Structure formats: C-alpha cells, structure tokens
Amino acid sequence: MAQFTRGFGSRRRDADPDLPPGQYLTTDFPVLSAGPTPRIPLSEWSFSIRTETGETARWSWDDFTALPSEEVSTDIHCVTRWSKLGTSWRGVALDTLFEDVETSFDYVMAHSYGGYTTNVPLEDLLDGKAWIAYEFDGEPLDPEHGGPARLLVPHLYFWKSAKWVRGLVMQQHDDPGFWEQNGYHLRGDPWLEERYW
Amino acid sequence: MRTTGWLAARIAAVRPTTSHARVLTLDVPGWPGNDPGQHLDIRLTAEDGYQAERSYSIASSGPGERVELAVDTVPDGEVSPYLVDVAEVGDVLEVKGPLGAYFVWHESDPDPVQLVAGGSGIVPLLAMARAHDRSESPVPFRLLYSVRSPDDALYRDEILDLAGRSLDLTWAYTRAAPEGWPEPVGRLTPDRVAAATWPPARHPLTFICGPTRFVEAAADAMVATGHDPARVRTERFGG
Image (cartoon, rainbow over all chains, first blue to last red; front, side):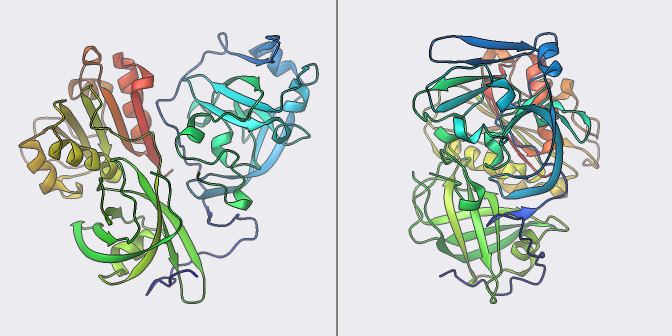
C-alpha cells in the first residue's frame, strides 16, 4: 500500500491511457547520455551486423540510405520517467537489414560510436518492432538525439534505442550492455516497469 | 548496493538554499546507503490514490538511513513545486534507490577530478566534493560552477567552505556577477571552460551535470580541448 503524502495532488496532470505506469508526459525532447556527443562525418559512417561465424554485413551511408525506409509514428518512454507521444521518425526496418543475415543466436549487442552498448533480444528487433532511424520530424537526426542514425526500439525503454549506432553483434546469451551493467533492467519493458535490477 | 523497493521516507528537515530551491533531509528506514553521484526515485501519492514519480540526484553519500536532496523549482512542474513550497517536516513520501552506477566517484579512483555544474546540476557533484573532503583521498578536486547570479548558487556557503579546504573553485555567472567580477558574464565559452579545468595532460575524470544545453556545451568544450571522451561523464536534465 502506497504511503499518502500530505498536501500533494493540487497540481496534478491528467491521466493518459497511453502513458505506462510511473511516466509523465513531456512535449520537449530531453537528452540523456552518459558522455559527450560524438560527431560522425557521413563519409566515415558505416553500419554493420556481425554474426557468430564472423560474417559481417556492412552498409556505408549511401548504401544505407538507399535501402527502403519507413515512416514511423510512435510513443517513446525514457526510464527517467518522461514519455513523448506521437513522435515521427524515418528509418530502415531491422527486418530489411536482417534479410540476408544467417544466425542461430537469439540476442544482439548494439554498439555505438563513443563506446555505448546495449543488449536486445533479436525478437524485440524483428517483425516491424525496430528501425535504424535517421530522420526525426522530417529533418536529419540531430547528433544530440543520436544522429546520424540511432536504433529505435520504441516498445522498450528508450535507453535501448542506442544513439550513434554503428553496428549489431549477435550473441549467444543476453549479456548486459552499458546501462544494464550500471543498474538498469536487462530487457526494459515500460508497461511492465522493468526499470532496474 | 541493490536498488530497494519503495521505502517510506519522512522529511526530517527542510531549509531554503536559494529563493527557488530547497534542501530536504529524509529519514529512510531500510535505505542501504549510496555512492556519491547516485540518484533516487520519489513517489508522491495523493489521498485519492493519484501518483507522480520523479528522479532526483542525492546530495549525500555513504552508509546510514539519512538522505539529503536539493530540489530546484521547475515553474510548470508537478512534483518540484510540492517539494519546495508545500512539503514540511514530518510529511511522508516514498523513495526507491539508489540508482545509477556510472555517474559515481569512488574514493579509490587515482585521478584528479574535474566537476562542472550548471545550476541545480551541482547536487550530485556536491555529493562527490563532500565525500572527497571527508576522505583520505589525495587526489585534487576542481569545480567549475556556472549559475545565473550569485544568489542562484545552491549550497553557496558550503561550497565556499569546501573551497577553503579541499576544492579548487571557479564560479561562472551567466546573467549577473558580483560587483567588480573580472570575468565576462554570459554562457561559458570553450576557452573559459579550458582555462578553468584541468588540462588533458593531468588525465582527470570529469563529471558534468546540468541542463542539456549546458552539458552539451561543456562536454564539447572538454573534448575540443583534448580530453578523452571516455573520461567525461555526463548527466543531463530538462529539455
């Protein structure tokens, strides 16, 4: 049973069924990162997927942006408790990128420029659930928000949507990434409030 | 230290630290202690069951069941105006924590520490400066604290006190400086950040905390000066 807090509640916000438990609505786009924002020239950018055999699929910026892309309208939920509803993105579905990738491993470690990592089960990335996004609101994705391109896995807390993503490495086990080693939940479903260990 | 479930927290003391920010001391039976730099979640529950939850940095560290927070009012906020203007000694809320294991200073770290704070971003950095002050650690600490005006500095007296003992302190003012202040008033420039922080050759561990714009600018300046980005840790809040 929760403890009542005397005098609280006069400035409450409206309940919203689109908000997972413990979240509040924001209209701006807060930035959360563990370090400085890396800036990657498009001429040096690449994205790769490496499997257990060492086989690596790699896309340059031109290769990548020539792939079929999708417009994505989605809600996003940060573990620090803000949610932003109806955000719009453009990106390449992971289904497209995984089309010719052969793997028997069930887990993925996403790696970013700047050294960030996050682990995600492969099934959370496929079937139209995740993208490598490179536009936000019709504009190139700002470096502060993960540009040139970031992983977008909107059904999980937003730390899983790795900014500045540069590659995915298949892994046999769900080994923890950066925040997952630093106190945050291995999977991070906002509707189940999978916030912390 | 594992994260606790929700624990009842009784407000043991409140005091203003600026005209818009307040220090709250909480008694939290069952609190496992925390490292300097960690944060916690607060949950408030209205009598009809309505709840709001937010994260706040912790100004204290170490063992014990007493936890200190400092909260700055977000004008259109829901939780911070309650904590700054309404909550009183004896009121009870709930906390969960400690949270975060990365934006943390450990007494055993061998390198000099650079703290860079903007506004209420001082809170987790003060926890580190306090821990360093009472530790045996021989490493030098420097703080660059950017505030709108002298009256907007949280913990001003205590920071001045630490500066007399264990902290190399530089103020930066963005709107109004004390009379005769020799530095320009305005947003920090890369040159001023470089002049007020350890040079890369000292290989410092840097912690930057504040509003997003401030953190972006300060972290970019550190990297441009030649600091290894992997040695610059940041915590951002707000839009």
